Length: 184
Image (cartoon, rainbow, N blue to C red; front, top):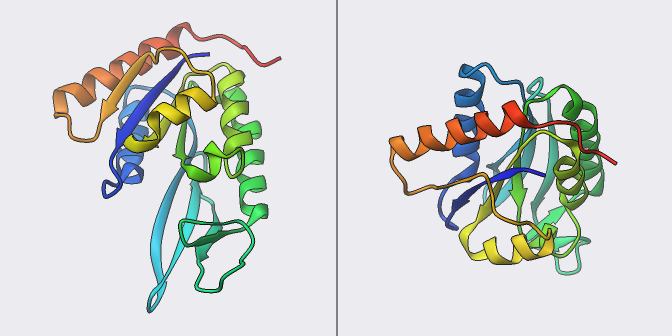
């Protein structure tokens, strides 16, 4: 399994960067699958998380901020919806075979605990194409351990320059050129 990392801090939009990565890889002629996430204001004091499928731009609501104690699957003040995670997993399973690269914008605390996008991430890592995994800097060591990952083919920190970004895209493109089916 080959993978690359996009690493950023808590206040850095890895989702914006994931979109730039998708555009950069597509400009290099690669077929990109996976998803990006976005958080937006749903109303005064309320936020929601939406996941966007790279393949066709369709979106599914993943969760919302929760002010009520005891909301199911509440993590980091968000209450997540299981059907959203299940839909994203179906997207990955459907799109992986036709992709050169899979971008997964979502390895957080929920996934570290075995929930959320964890099933989609594990599936993608076995599917064959290189996976780009966006992870917060403070979760990096835990993510590598939880997924039993060795060295990435490339990594990009959100504070790096444009030259590093281009080298990251080139390394991922090279990995995609040599990837073969791995799903068992």
